[in-house]
Image (cartoon, rainbow, N blue to C red; front, top):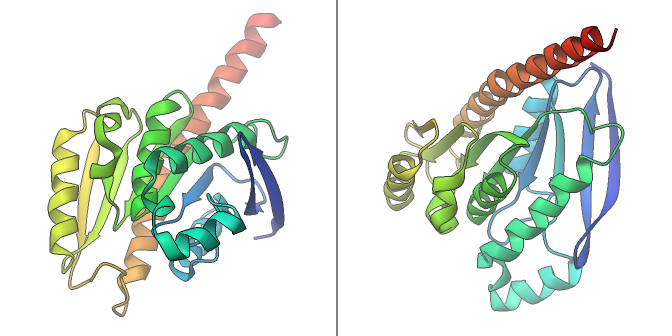
Length: 234
């Protein structure tokens, strides 16, 4: 499968962010990645998941939600990585940006968040209910999304390692709080970072299937609406 890859400077309110976009030919959806605590768009784990999504015909955009200067400051203070409001606002800005770009404007959008990035993804999904069609959280902290959990309209998959007991409990509580279809899946014998053999591959496969199911159906609905519009104007 051929794919177009580019590194973009994404302008959002208050910042210019760096992002890596991979756009497979005939992509049927776009997944935006929100990295977790102390990570970046170069995260090995997120890139492994993105590669699997690309092979499944999904475009991906891995973006740094903090600027280089902010990343440097956060390495010392560890404050910004837990500023869910800031991270969510940046992700909302990225969502609005991709909706204005010709290569991605027509693609249904999904969000993939890890650790604190999962909370930011859920807050962004609540703010863009009419745009975000699916969410996946990997080892995430959905509890940090607060009241926004009740506003999420996109089907949400929560993936947690079996040995990540505290995060498992927090994800179960979040699933039980959400009003939308939310599913909790536990990866056997996996820890928080899914470093055990085969664990990350399971995360990637389950994520690909979740996004494929929900973004493909959204793309089909959009195609039918477009066809109906054309017939109505003829």
